[in-house]
Image 1 (cartoon, one colour):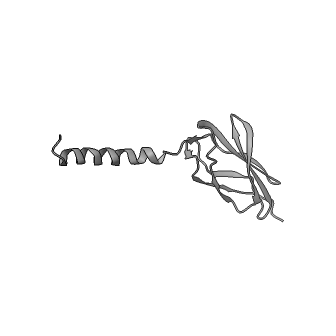
Image 2 (image 1 turned 135 degrees about the vertical axis):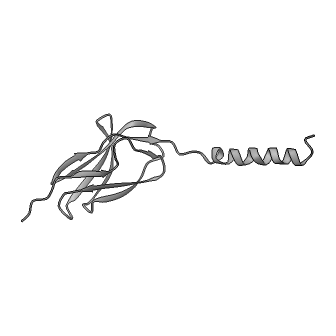
Image 3 (image 1 turned 180 degrees about the vertical axis):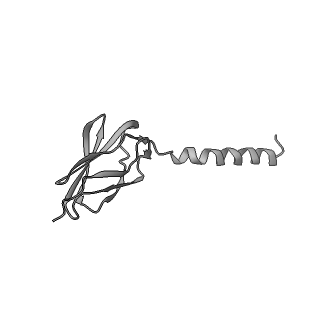
Length: 120
């Protein structure tokens, strides 16, 4: 029997950032195939929630909760029978609201309408 390699993160990478409400691909190497892996979200070195408990397939797609606080001191921790690993720190940022995305379009439309109406 070949011993399982230790767990190592591939994603997230240190210094990256992810938007609330969006999908984040978590990936790693190592661990025994099929063993149970727990993924925890940490902030400032303290576990704040469990992300998932899954079979080791070396990847997990996670929707960053919309309720997550913005910040830069987040990490993920993997724990299994093969050991544990902690990711580098990453940030969580807010998703840009639809109103802010549409604001430039509305503003340009308003200026165009004003110009076409003769500026009066």
